[in-house]
Length: 181
Image (cartoon, rainbow, N blue to C red; front, top):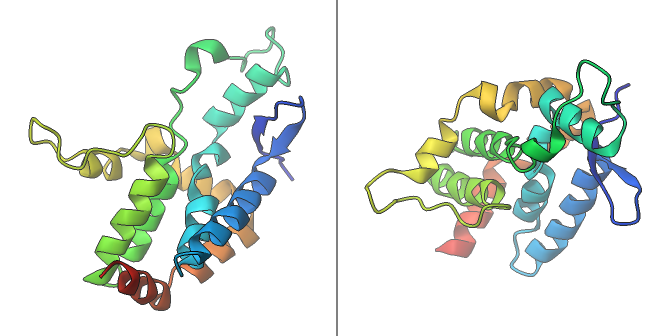
């Protein structure tokens, strides 16, 4: 089984992506529980780095951590790629698409969750830019070859996908929506 790497910690240890996502999911669930939306919090944590299940990100992190030798063909200039491999849009697109099934509340809840996920590095996405462009739609319509959503879904562990599916349901939508009304 392939071990996906999330990042190298400050202490030099590598953290597996699976461990990172579930640990962040636990933390964000706890934070969300303070507002009565622990399931939504867990989803945000589980999905924030979903795109790291892609080969592009794993080659990048492998090059950066020395797992891939500079003499190997797949080695990449990791310094030049820092911050350039989109790893948050995959999770944002997944939650947006998944929540929209429960119209009309699901669309609003999905957008809020997707904004949290997609904005976790860049700051809150401007949904309506000064020139009139919709920044949220641009991100949700970003092509799969840039977001790696389908690759991530097929590469992620089955129990991770099962947990995502268990969290996105009508009760989540109704409960979250009740908190924002």
